[in-house]
Length: 400
Image (cartoon, rainbow, N blue to C red):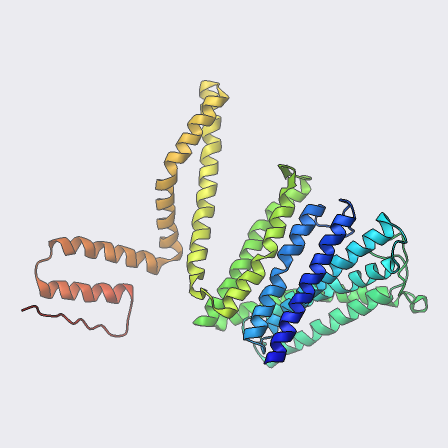
């Protein structure tokens, strides 16, 4: 057990060291982006730090549940991403910023190309098949793990020996390329890449099937992963729109890259909460608040824009229209929040809504009820309707 802990924390230490090295090269490269930059050197630094959430959660899972493969998969993803980031920073420095300052720049770029996608892809694809127990749903689904493993290994090997220009730095040839292989490596890449996408579809099918068969704690664990995935899906159209509209900036910061970087941390956090069962049962609260405040934000934004337009047309004064609209939205916040919460509870959390209505009705009867026997009967009925226990007993202490 001690050796497992040392291995997990050691891998996390390697990831942190590589991420620190990547930050050093960001500084040495003088603000120039490396070939796989997410937008700017500053955001590359934020991305590197946020991606450490994967090995951090992975180490926590591996230490507490060493037989759960998900912890080791997250450590693998973190290791691959940190290694790629550090190697590309080194390649940028020795190939572009200070050519020839250190040997091995092209080799670093070739290795970075070969490790980043297989590590991240295998961790994410296998996660869908193994979550949350670390074991496939059935032995047949275990075959998909072997397919994914073989696919990413072939992809990495084909990338390493593919002759010709480097993917990240086309001006340089791959120093590990084997010319005698001809087009074989590229043919392997053309096959292995679609297999990854097909594995993604099958992995999602396995996850959906597991959710359909789950109950109790496992169902709530799966809800956390579905919640994180839903956040990604909900934000994807906005990220695409921001990308197509160019570099949308606020205070000089690219909005799309910031949102993407923040979303990086949602998946490991959700998985860590689910597997380690820390505040596991708060998932319904999280989903409810997300629904409520998303609808509230959209409602208030639409109200504000409509108010500005109507008041501006009526008065012809833009400053007055903005002031009136701001006051109107502020006044609507509390009643809108109350109504939206009630609507969400009634539509998606019917048991909670019915329980609240039952307690409210009981409170009204409690003020007028004088008969102790009737009060006891009402109280038992309320407990049955709200908590739904298998048995109810009420003990009353008689005062002398």
